[in-house]
Image (tube, rainbow, N blue to C red):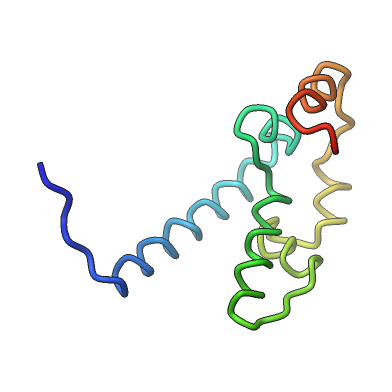
Length: 103
């Protein structure tokens, strides 16, 4: 079946709706640590917040990192860390270091 022709306005609305759904999903799945996301998918909530901030900057909108993270986490990042972040174990850290030596 051929892919439907979608005008730019509709495409942007679909992408925005998908992004909102992704944010809602990540905000619900507090049981999934960022380090596991990085190890399995190559990105995490912090990456997503950085991409959001960078996209805003491309549009001439300055968004502080703390505000971009609150958008992605659904709460201040520090609150999320206290409530949900657990220390990474040695296996998680080892896998991450092989993927991204900067982490």
